[in-house]
Length: 262
Image 1 (cartoon, rainbow, N blue to C red):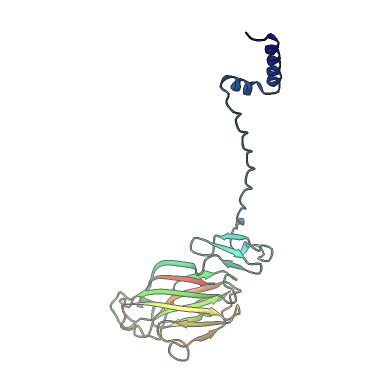
Image 2 (cartoon, rainbow, N blue to C red; image 1 turned 45 degrees about the horizontal axis):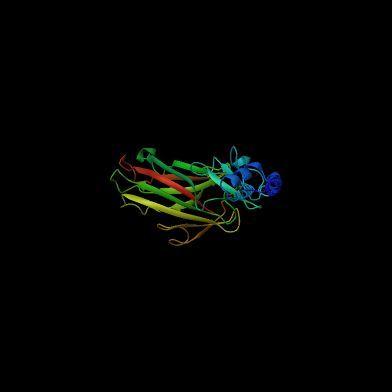
């Protein structure tokens, strides 16, 4: 038989214990004697957002570019420089293209000239203009032009490539980048390649055609003073000669490209 005094004391102790324990935990202990659940782990603080890349500004054209000195580390998209536009980055002193080389122009021209223009006619077939200051003092150009002569005659094969700037024109004040000297009399096609390199100056350049002769001797470098602080136009033409009397004397500029070597 249970002692009523001992039972009352045990009941009092149990009540004190229950008053100091949360009800849910006491119920669990009373039902199954399970241990207390572990405290939840603290939620980690959110990671800071990743740094955003330098903003790219879209400008209306090369002439509207901001100061390079005030835009160090920033990029701009220039819609009127390059085939389809181009991305430029400021290094703090100048704007430089994000890609090198940068294709300034690539055009399938198909412009042609025949002997109906008369003897010694120098005809501009197509052209491309490079805005002022696109090239820097150490930049260069790589110019490629494909000509064909579909008429079958061998008397008129004189493609021309010239540069002129400012108020100049192809016919009057241009600088020859290539003079074929009539060396294509037996060719059906010709691919011309010309390099121009600024010599740490905006108006002192060295020119070298890869094909045929140019300069004082065959394939020699020639010095030039094309001023790239002005708009410079590259003109692709054809020169007639005195023996070209047939409409079969056709010269065709198939295509050309102009690349900037930054």
